[in-house]
Amino acid sequence: MLETKDRAQDVAVTGDSVFVVDEYGKLHNGLVTNGWGAVRSCLNVIFVSEDKTKVDQYGTQLERLSSCSHRDDTEAPGRYWFKSGEKKA
Image (cartoon, rainbow, N blue to C red; front, side, top):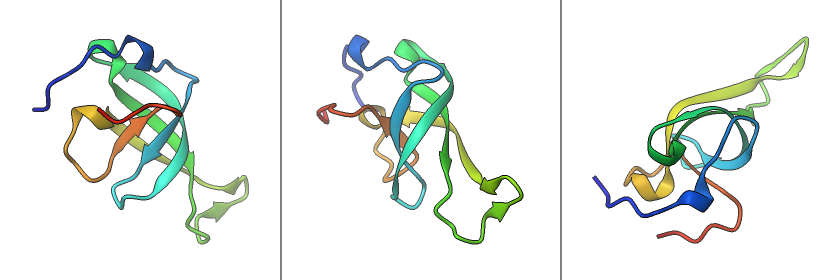
């Protein structure tokens, strides 16, 4: 596990806009739907799908990622979030 730094300024709450990197390493604008853990570093987020085939009567479908860690808390190449302007630790 990576060392956790004091990230009080990095706290994200429901309704916040964050950047999210999906499991394929693609960057998206995301919206927080829930958060928990120490300083709410683990989030559920939604983002608009870039898959042109994912369209329904409501428009472009949404993608969901659950249990997304902050990028400083994971070594994974994807499925993480961060806020705009944050410097990587």
